[in-house]
Image (tube, rainbow, N blue to C red; front, side, top):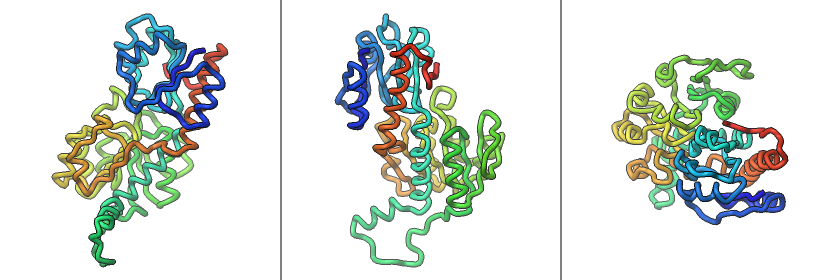
Length: 316
């Protein structure tokens, strides 16, 4: 089976993939364009794409040889799964492999933003720190605060567990369906606006896609209020970035912690200039063990496809 991997992987992952398939691994930083995606599907039996590759509807207009897109990552909003299905191409993802690492990044952003860690580091690196002062860089106390989880799937639950057991936080959550059998106290809130009003920290953990694009805009940020923080570890376009910039600049929310961006990899210069925002370059799963596990999860789907078995992580 001819396999195309659209980005470099960890050494262990590349070795495993190359040992099992006739594998081509692209050494590039930018994702495939729509035309390149179409050409790749004409030449390969299977592809391992990832964030930034444009498998949009137009890419499926030809007569592709490819029969599986084994996505590297849990999120797959860069793939038009309906168009793929119409072309007879299955799509899989890597759901479980990303959960714990992404939840860790959410807590990193909560702590760094609330305690002004980035601002403090920049102050020190500039050589402007003059020693400890009782009122220097006063931030927000995290322990015992209220966290509102927007999206209580695998990642949302892992974030909530860390908040409750690690920091004694009160947990609220908003989810499209009823969530039960949690092993920690948490209250489901039916209305997103009510969740935002009651949260000190609102964490976005819903899947990306048309159904959640701009889910958080100016009205929602106003509900969050001037003493609360927004954390986004999901997909950048869930938050309307222009509205976020205005809310931060106007003091309508206290701050934000972001690992993803609406026009990634471009980041708003206004956000970059703000001290009350913690910005990370999409580090959610950036640990070698995690990235290898993600590739192995994708490889499980590739092997199942090659052997004619049901795909473990099919999404279409």
